[in-house]
Image (cartoon, rainbow, N blue to C red; front, side, top):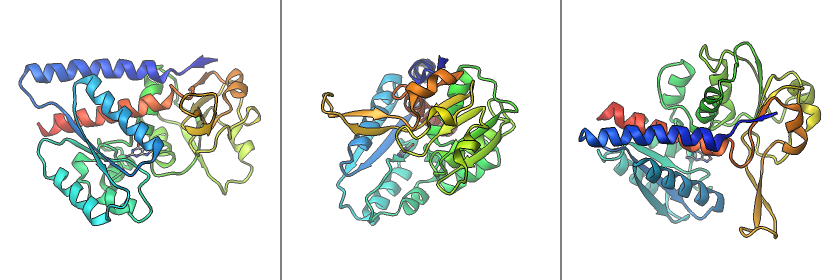
Length: 291
Ligand code: GUN
């Protein structure tokens, strides 16, 4: 078993981006600028957004964090997005999900102008991705593709099982793995809560991507010997022995599954850092194409 070390791979991407940003600065060109909107006080979202802002600093990007109260009206949030859409200094806009219940994710995503949608969630960008056109790819599946690329994992002709059909991870992941690219060229099966015989289906997987958000859902009896296992889950479990009061658990029972796998991502330190690296790459690309 070998570890797909997302921390290491993300560091390599960030170092390269840092050099590219310094180069732009030396040439008097614009520095990438990410605007992140955080609504309310969801602990996990606070952590993720803080990590995104910190990563911007590390590579020399500008970033603006906009914190809004959880009772903000949808209209006021949309106005804020419009303001950022019209600000020529902003290259990328992200609104951290989930949003409070009274705000429609769809309205928010559709309001971000597609050429600043560095999360790749706008229907225009999703459409382009499905057609294999260059565009912003959603950060988590993009990060997983970058991780497979970093470790030169051969995916051609392999059977990938994606568990979870969210717009953020499962669905775009299934599209990317099936594309005629490297990594890619997989036969893909997407599984969800209504899938019958999930265990038997998973056992067919040369690659298993677990993105359903249920801690330790994937057990050793569901994974074929030698499979490549990608764990997208990151659930907070109460743990009084930790300073933070919680520990992080993935969707895969790492201890039992890892001995059967050829490659596996840890949690934390696997997919998470790659998501951030992919977001930074999207933001850089946005700046480069506009300026
Ligand atoms: N919530 C969970 N993952 C993501 C992500 O990639 N982007 C945003 N904006 N919110 C998220």
